[in-house]
Image (cartoon, rainbow, N blue to C red; front, side):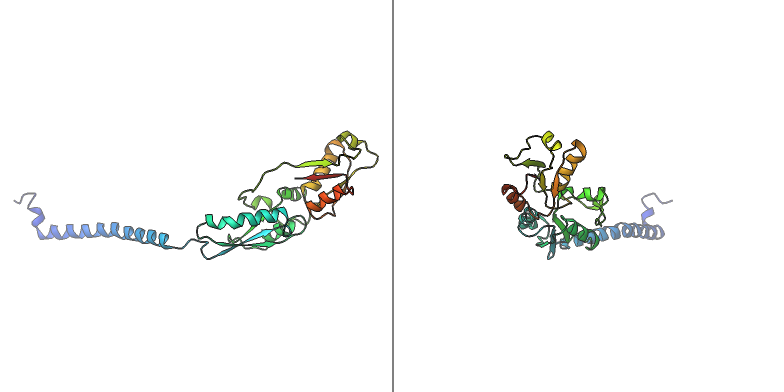
Length: 228
């Protein structure tokens, strides 16, 4: 009668045990080997943006404040993205940033290589009021960050006869209010005052740039101007 220590010397039991060990080793070693290979490939793979160029779309002409913001940001952003991609700025002015937003939403492949460099914050209002030229869904854009934060304000010439909102409300002739377009805050702000407190403005939207708006205001061509 063999002892329990003699069992390991029986050929049949030794072969069975060896096969069982081999099966278990294969079940452990194969997945472990696959994991090691996957980990190696993950570390060896180049960053997504390496050797690529990101196109930054700006909804204003060159030299505009939004254009300057975009160019200032992209001059440094590449150093903080894995792969250190290059950046190019493409100006796409028109309709108060609407052309650029429509283009990005409808015409550009969502591959991470095209983005809006800077866009007017109030653009979503155009979608809310149902403007027919809007082709984007604002909720589907992803916000990355903002270069600055500021409050909207409206000012008038000091030598104008309008000193208070009440003066504007009761004016026989509404003051001229310059705006750069119909899709921005400089157009919505006087309209908001008209609808809420009854202030009357003659809104002129033929002015293209903020600097021009300030110039015509100082030249007494207009009395009021909203700025952001």
